[in-house]
Image (cartoon, rainbow, N blue to C red; front, side, top):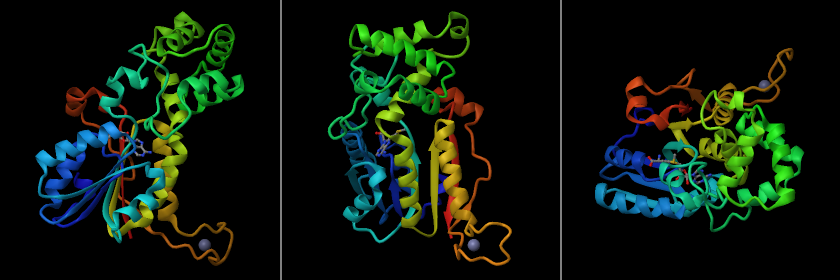
Amino acid sequence: MDGLALQPGSIYLDCTLGGAGHSIEAAKRIAPDGILIGIDQDDMALEAADTRLGVEAPDVTALLLKGNFGNLDDLLLQAQVPYVDAILFDLGVSSPQLDIPERGFSYKYDAPLDMRMDPGTQSITAAQIIATYTETDLARILRDWGEEKWASRIAQFIVQARAKEPIETTFQLVDIIKAAIPASARRAGGHPAKQSFQALRIEVNQEMAVLERGLEAAIRWLAPGGRLVVMSYHSLEDRITKEAFQKMSRGCTCPPDLPVCVCGNKPILKVITRKPLLPSPEELERNPRSKSVKLRIAQKL
Ligand SMILES: C[S@@+](CC[C@H](N)C(=O)[O-])C[C@H]1O[C@@H](n2cnc3c(N)ncnc32)[C@H](O)[C@@H]1O
Ligand SMILES: [Zn+2]
């Protein structure tokens, strides 16, 4: 919240509204005449946020928009604001999404393999990916998006299993993953399906490509002096954020051996956090799901 540097009257954009936990706090800081724009692609999140904001921040103008922050330009044109003063991305899935079995995000509940954050408009589900991708492509997404050491073996087991019967539920997939990872390797670390489930979720929702587009647009919409805060929960998201910040804060992209700059690019961002901020031991104690968070802050020049 402090990283967002909100003032009374600020225009605040929450790109991942969720249950409005952050937005409620932001609303207090921009009251009385600030504007809160909240985006989420999940109808359930928008409804929950709407109710909460109505009760806990009734006197702030809140504009809640359904959509994907990968289409930020369209959404902000709808909002009819000229610029924004502060933007937050709190990436990934929300606790309610994880905890509703039917959404198919969790390896802890048996449910159809869905994992779409916006079940209304996106078409491809996790089950369709499992059913149609080649073994090579499955191995690639498990490795790239899940950093799964056993990616090739899991992909191979999936392809063998789907030849016998369709893989349609989370527990079917969990069993296949457990069979693919050798018992000795399974004893270490967390749940054996954690990384594969993360990988599928990222592929279903195209999270990396969407994040690159979203950050690029967000930086353009920021007013001079405006703040951008990004909270990410795995190393790939954090890398995309770090690289976007670096690129925009460097300006000139000429090869170092050129005597003068010919590209003319000027820095448009100042990085406030050289290293990402991590949760304190007290926060970890209170909220174990904060374990993997990395928070980066930048300021528009
Ligand atoms: C970690 S939760 C945010 C929680 C929120 N900060 C709070 O305090 O309640 C992430 C939310 O972002 C949404 N989301 C994730 N990717 C999105 C995207 N590309 N476009 C729009 N919403 C997205 C999810 O639906 C989810 O509700
Ligand atoms: Zn240059």
